[in-house]
Length: 527
Image (cartoon, rainbow, N blue to C red; front, side):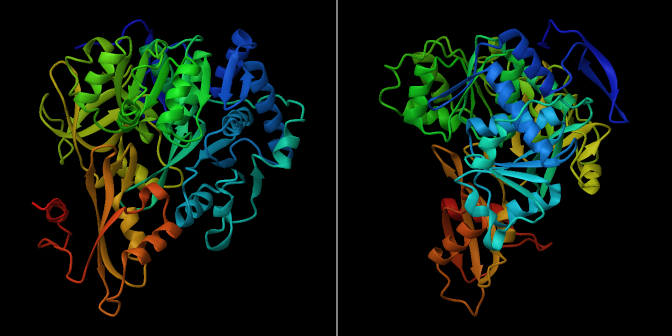
């Protein structure tokens, strides 16, 4: 079995009942990473956004000043701070400020609206919320977030005043303390807050740095949302550990992304396959100087073979590296060893350092190598559980193993294959959309009797959201326009159905009364 080599590990006891392999030498927390970057690379560029450029010294000063400002507001160690902000310099500074305080960052998609946003703010018990121009409209009206709550506009006077503060000493931290809570929707439709500890964050960052050979000369592009585990861990935290430079895009768009890759001499990216596809569609792609781009990480969905071949033809120096993980595994649980990328391109690689991946049947018994079952994952990157949700924690974790809900296999050589999704999920360009969540919103409409969400194949994004909706007999005039307007008020844009099938007849069900989605998919595809 191919293995990662060169790092000393040891078994350690954590979270009460887990014994896991850990790196013997490691930072304690994100704050430790930042302090090391400042000490070793203080005058070097650390953060770029549009026309703004900050060195590590400037990043430390600004994040320290914002931490002091939060402290003056009464925000203390362990308090939750929601970051409902799109990609920008301020959200990265806020993440670092929260880490310095020993508080808990709760990044939330800038697209989140309505009940989803309100639930996260209430459930996390947030004491403070950062927002921006794009997200300000989500804070009032029907979806108003609860009070008391400090609200800080990252483009406003209160935030600017914070930057004039002095820098208070950093709080003491321990490895098992929660550093970040990232909410991920479950099959019940209720979001679960994965508690990412300092131990989790450090080990996942180390896996990226060590396995992909990232260092202080690397310039990393964040074109994915900072609110996603990839943005928070694979890019923000990993850049701090590598002491490199993070170049931030507000939103991914192919043309400006291609320009940034060239102008900023980007060497490392982590994107979903759809983004690479969209870049390749640009007519100027082949003529653009991308000679510095050496590692292209991807995950979230399968990279088409034609995409791999086209990228290899134009950029022979670019190593495409597949990784498989989830919010609960703090991003990567497997990473493809570059030398095996072509020969094992149908796999997601081998377990990341310190990761233990087994395949279990429905009775909780391990199956032989090569056979399929549910992937269970254990290691120092696996979160201890869900915030204020002991029932879900007990259900989805066993002796430190997280039940992924994905069907896969591990072959005799240790390579992991992900074959299907046990959970009913739509994967729209890397955005994971759980059908139950969207369905629960749709059936709350006065005119809707029942609804079912299925994935509609898309050549660019992989899948899009399609809704089958049965109207109530007393509402025969329900239209797609009415449903679109309702969805806009209740759902993040990427979760909204893009196509609809309206009907009066009931949805197909089996003998147990469960909707037969296979029949709906066949109907959608005209099978």
